[in-house]
Image (cartoon, rainbow, N blue to C red; front, side, top):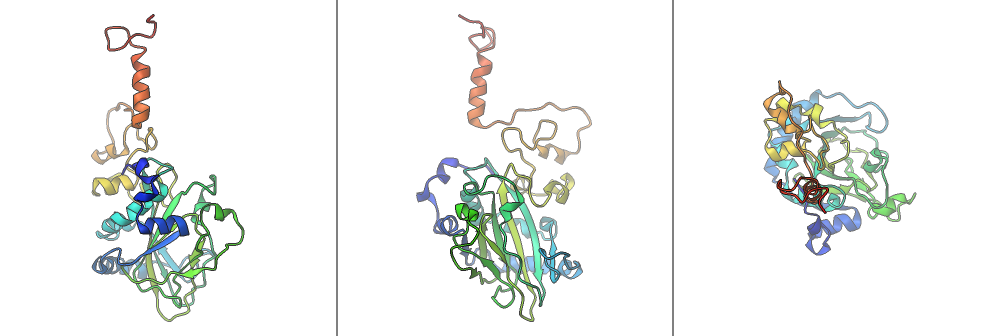
Length: 305
């Protein structure tokens, strides 16, 4: 999933949702996915929700359940992860800082009655990189049950992203991102947010799918979550998003080749390393190599007068 940098730099090419995401740090897309898809995923994940123990620690929440590896827990998750409108937003937000995006995590979350409000945080703090300009991450919260103020809907501080992430106190009051199944709550990794407290008698369930720069270490270790024998069953686009692709130049390779080579099993014999370069790098390299070839081999020769 390569990104067209030129298109991303033009604000005129952005959708209204992309403008909202970049200007306010979040956007809510109503009806972003069919309710039938959300219902099918919710049914597939139901037994796992019941079997999963509560989290430990004040951040995850002692009345909260979380589990990942969702691409193997429901055959419908790939459609959600590859939602075109969401991918467009992720590529718009992240495309200036990477050649391709990758899946950061796909995690199911359940807030039981009595769950406390989560500590407000920015997910970009997982990485100790430069702040205020680069966006590292795009989060998408997909409600499986209605999100309401009473049951712990996500709390978001508008305008707290980008350079405002360097300010200790947000300038604007938070909003409650109430939403229905099928809606998508999208926010940047630099946006201050947190789950609300569940003061209702109902269970609040949702899925967080996030995308990050292709050269970062993702939150969920994708190669352990989806080893080659599992990832080989994915579509090529889903497999690449889950880490089975190189981020040019040559990052994330296996023995100098795309890690998707492992879909045929671990090679018994040595394999050759193969360049995986961006077009601009390939052009520079071609000229450099040609200048060193003897005349008659397609170049002018490194020692030619």
